[in-house]
Image (tube, rainbow, N blue to C red; front, side, top):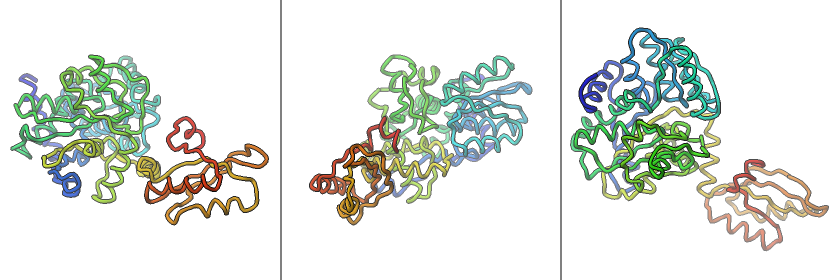
Length: 412
């Protein structure tokens, strides 16, 4: 397709209308009141595959000739977009997904494909299955569909910005736009489109703290591979930002790239579900969670909620992470005297809102004392200093292992 980037993105947006209507741009009163701002959500979680990834997959696949098979690598959302398009274009596809991908995303990908896709689970991270998918495509003569490092995909993701300009025509430089970043395709596409249209607002790009690949690339002057990757925010957990997206993002001010803690995102997920009835996946909630760190009072803010493919089997883990981050749950290893009545003496130290969620004898450290693992939940973080103060006064030795990662992984 000829023409400039904006022309190609607008053509892609027009073609998309044969498949689904624009996703809504909705003012959220609850978030607006909380932050003293005018907060709008661009609901990409409401596409037919519950994420924006359908846009890029559509734009890349509509340019393929014949019935050549396609291959893709994805932690879930790109996979679902490719599968949805394979079914509608009657084109065979093979999709590689990490073994760690939530089951809900695997099942939905298979359903969206309608028998036209084969799913292969390979490796623990996106980068593992990316290499496998590229090798398979080379051997099979299939077209590889990158989830972000592809010009047609980036143009497809830019259609989000095309819709925004139509939905909020007075979008101006005084506004703030908050976008999540994984591989960088969405932020690169939207930023390029808005810049080409002369409508680029102030932006904040948000990454999970355990997968800050864009920040690392900006610091190094080019894409680098992270040594460690936290995959909890699976839709944005990418160890290396794409080369093509980075070329469009290389001039971003590093101060405008934020990293948010994975466990705090869990609080935002719970709040949006319980208060607003909005189901988002961790990556989809990144932009909303980042509002906690931004000075948005009195401003109009657009947050792109990129996906809603949440596996509800993860809810217990989300609740656990949220409570620990909020200081409402702690794990203590307590030195318990081995005598009759010792447990009763300890229970008497608990406050009215303190609840034992886990109790496990670990070992006897001596004949007279034993180590006990306690998981304690409460309704106010201030209750814990009060409890441990009473424990100190009564001679119960203790150690807080809530945030001691290596030890907590072994016993919690």
